[in-house]
Length: 350
Image (cartoon, rainbow, N blue to C red; front, side, top):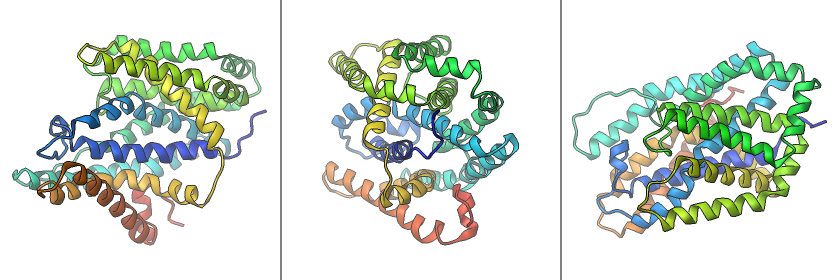
């Protein structure tokens, strides 16, 4: 039977995904379209950044939804339904509301300063839309998750474990995402924030993340065995997109590429990251507050660094360094050390 011991590879993937988010959001400031999605942008673009960005953008957000669903599996092992909702409200809903009414308006204030706009208070989810989605998924899917937990030795769960020990079961996962893309028909597949496409895509990923961990060792042995094939398919599809950059890309193709990237990440993560150390202990605690806070420091860095008459590559390094340093200094000396601040960033007061 699959053990419920902590999975350090999943912790590492969450930390890495947040790190990629910081890099990606910094990169948006150097794209000409960044202003259209509410970012402060530099007057000179760094166009070649788009090549790694477009590779990441088809799987980085879905990966976080998968990992969040996995986390719920471990969370319900020692909790009932009421305890889970209470814990997730404390960890997700409170930081979400705090971010909507304080963090997002601060970011918007810096944007208004940069573009010499009239200063107004604007509450909104901004980058924290992800938290709102996750909290809704917990409420919607927890009855099913607790049913599966209660019947973990039953026929249905045994069938799931057997099914997901076979790589062909992943076709069911891909088919679910393909069906979503057909029914919702998003204008842009990679546009997840505050869209119905992002909501339903996240719901599917959240569900299958839970199922993957529920499936136990049979799934992880399978994903480990076929990881190189998943990586090869993802690279081939990404290369095809680059070679046909001017052509409209099929959502079906993007779904397959996205899933193959994610399956390969799970496989390589399980192979090389399933261990702990002091860095993971610290970063796994810091990642969530840094995610909540990072847009404030990103926009503050952009406000001061973008007007400088320096080379664009140096600006990128300075903005990223300022954002990361500012987030971790604030985390270390404010969030970690002031008890009443911790719950606002999803941490326990103790």
